[in-house]
Length: 207
Image 1 (tube, rainbow, N blue to C red):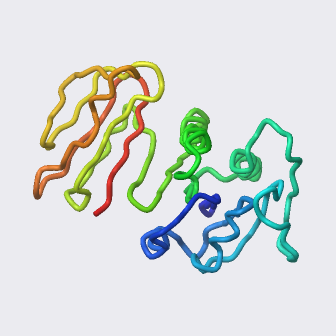
Image 2: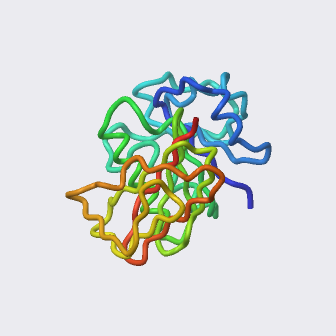
């Protein structure tokens, strides 16, 4: 099945960088004012959802789900749940970070929701890529000048960061002390990052 791309309304400045991640067979869901990015991204809308409190309701033949303004789920969360209902298992979220911190943090938590369901999820913005890290080892090459590992779910134990400027071995990172910020892959090496217990947010910073 194709990948589902969720497009939110947060600011995107580097459209060229974002377009490099997009694929022709993606299923694209635009959330409310995420529609303002459609022309610059140059991708079709397969589904539009929103309460349209920040963008006019579109006059289009594209399938549109109009939501009430008073609801528990944000437009973005609803879009993800609807895509899960339709059978998607691989997600890319763009335009969901920046601006209002409450929305940014809420959208980052979507990655935890997807991970808990055994689904794949990634967020990209103008500067970075974000995904959940657990016991699976992730590799980071030196095309990324920096990476950070943040604990956003309990306590992470058995944290390893190898082939990095600041290596970690069997470390522990709690939510109260986020010392895993801004590490660097060694030149010409693949950094290896893993967590034996808990879940962390891996953020890879692009040049």
